Image (cartoon, rainbow over all chains, first blue to last red; front, side):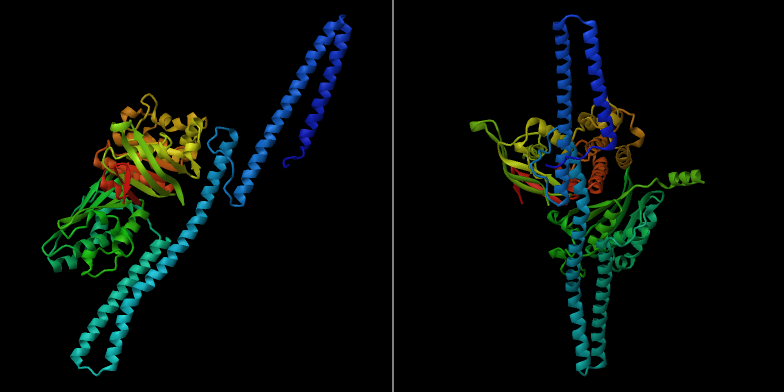
Length: 360
Length: 221
């Protein structure tokens, strides 16, 4: 039996004083009864009533003390169980008593603390799968490069043939370079080591930055690239990384839109979010693959003919989500796709100016 | 880790010939901290399922286990405490009390439990859902999106581990729907809560980590 905790000094003193007071009161009671009340029957009656009251209050005190001890015992048991990592047994968590309320809060607290442990284990697993993915992805181009180097070295080739092989070699190296860069970005995203500096700034600048990366390839394919964006719209975002995310979406749009198509960016300021739509007239995405396109290394069967590793949209989604935004997609296969990026809305350029003036 | 486990859940309405099988053997596991969307046509049993997970309705067969506790083993009073402490509900028609202010509406579940809100947490939710300026207003003075944000704050205030949302954007235009759902998703991520949402809007469902489709009282993959 646990819980026979010793009484504190103060408690002991209080107990002594109370006992003394009770004895004094009883002495006073006897004195009054014997000097003032002549009838023995009445004296006995009053005495027995007082005795009963005393007994009842003592009993009540004992009961209360036992309740508190029990409460403490149960609590200690729960804590012991939680400390050793076991789920507390035989508690009815939804009983409406003080004990279950405290126990409930305790296990909630325990869960929250445990969350960190679970998270770090999950991170470890992510990194492991990342490493195996990376090595898998890098193997193929490296094998290619090795092969071409072997051919160049081992065979006597004409200058022209050499040129052809060197060009292929360069292509492979570029591919590898692109892959490695994406992988580095991805691993930084996964492990959360990149710092997003979000601030209330113009969306139009970010959109312009993103569009500049696909301008050349769009022109080459004869795709009309256009944007509708009010320059006063602001959102709370990291311009550099968001441009990267939008650039990836735009890159896909251009890649999967046939010649003569169009890619349009539209920015709409909403109450809490700024919505940036990137719509194209490309091959589209089937409804059942809507959420797949954001997965790491996912490539839909229709895109097999195109270059790519399946990281662009995954990165874009990660970047946007880390800025407390989100991405949704709507598409009609054969007609086109619309990606909507939602970023937390800023104050807008006019109000922002006002706020800054006020601060000064 | 699964926070909700549903085993062979069945619920029938009516008897004999006219019997309707609202749920016809549902098995479902919901992982802790994830956002699950339940889609399906109206009458497919989505709401019945959600009500049973929330302890509002009892199944005819099968069982619901939430956080290690089987709901069928609980008494009515215990179910009430379960709903109060474990689950936050968000409905299509908001279900706010018109005669209470926004602040009182949000604190209402706590006053039922006889506790007061943690003031820091209250402020956090309020600024999160951008309700700071409307605390003394009445629900009727707010837009649909505003009312739904109040309802979300009310669902969050008791720090439940599960949020059950039944068509939370059903009464909102698509713009405020996206706005509100964005905030809801963000808050459950911030507080590591599990969100189960019914919707028939595929565009909204794709924001979930997992989409479950129900047809005629069964889950189809």
